[in-house]
Image 1 (cartoon, helix red, strand yellow):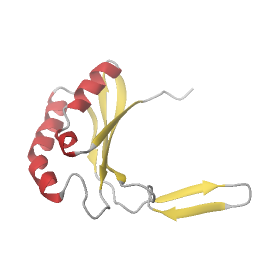
Image 2: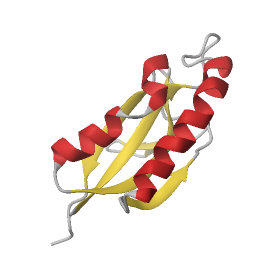
Image 3: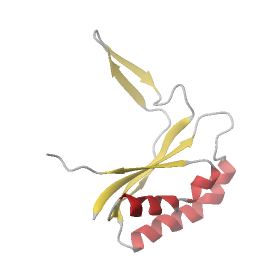
Image 4: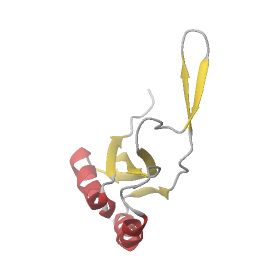
Length: 118
């Protein structure tokens, strides 16, 4: 089994976020049930965590570091949550990710496989 990171991207900062606060309320119980189902299959490595919308981005050019507020100043999508799961391969991890109920309201789930350090 491999470890995969599931990153849930959603619009947290615009005037009309998608999913809306009402949609997020509607999706909360199905989301909790989805995560509980992953845990029941012993495929949950680290539970979901939520993140603030501020963040900081550090970029370096040839002369100095530049620090800006917010990871997506020019866009709407922010990281709404992330957690680790176990799956045999990308196909299985994607199948698990496709079950995220927030997707139907406009969220995006990114799947990344963990690479062991050399």
